[in-house]
Image (cartoon, rainbow, N blue to C red):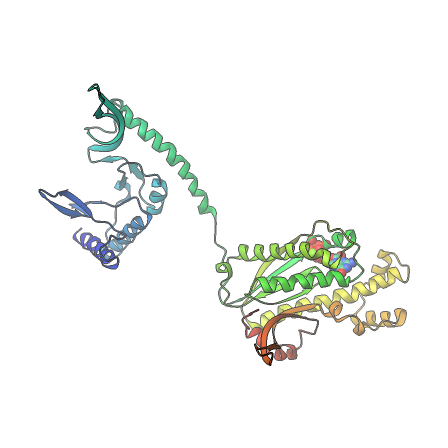
Length: 434
Ligand code: GTP
Ligand code: MG
């Protein structure tokens, strides 16, 4: 117990020193009066019982918890939780929170020793009126009562106003009990030092593209709208280094050491998706001035990739998907629109065909060289920050060379290593600056 006393003193001293004696996480209470002298008090020890005094303050409870844990660890003794009790003086609105935080105090009492201190409304004579009659006012006054058996019914019957206070108090605490719901919230932090990829995807875009009469298989304006939204996202969220997308699907890559939303997955996904969606709606008229927009929505998911190589493989996978899809869709819609085949006939026709056969079909039947199709359709879109040289005029009108970073959208092969060699700064993480 002596050791616990020393630890308490140390905590009080440390905090007092740190705060220049202005008071700290662990308070010192003054007892006594100026006539007879005062003593300062933090705790009382008797045999193996300890009473610790503190305010109803989360930081102080936290400090106490640390002291007790340290004491248990150092001494090998155990604090007997079953016999421990938090004793309140006056109303403590956050008692449930404090008791929960301390974890092991099962009981919460309002009683001090064999007595109890509580606030009571009493009538007091405050002055006399002009006739000399006393003027009474209601005042709240601290009352100390003593009883042998404070748990017995008789004690409470004799102090009805105290019972009223306690009931009122219990009702308040009941409200605070609802705080327990926050323990259901779990942090879902993305792995540190990994590339964060947020992939968004248009919801039911097969229907959306029909409702808005998109050109088949690729609608250039729809893809330009997607790219324009991506540029806006990159400008809005500086931790995104680049994005790669095809059709209704875009992957945004955040820098490895990003602390965006403390790497909380749900926040990062929701912010990215909602910003993209609102951009899509806002920019719609710019790209489709004559079409009314109906219900666009996007979903999103997060994945972390630990190395540059795996990230590059992921991007390669997306671009291969783009190529296979586009080649198939180009053949499919040519067979339907130009050869008059039904959708199921076109499907059967293409079943099991290889890339080379599809290319031959396009050349022989439709005089289309697949490799001459728009790069945006064949290779998707890659949006990234790039340094651009610009010329500015100084105050004398003379030209001054300068540079700034801007978001560029390219349609190129991102699978071959020479793309990454030519854009070595991308994975080297240029810090975007507008
Ligand atoms: P979920 O993503 O699961 O909600 O389904 P989805 O209907 O969005 O399908 P998915 O994301 O797999 O594919 C996107 C779909 O959007 C394509 O299959 C096309 O039907 C449609 N789409 C995307 N871009 C274009 C386009 O430029 N033109 C046309 N005509 N359709 C497009
Ligand atoms: Mg989709």
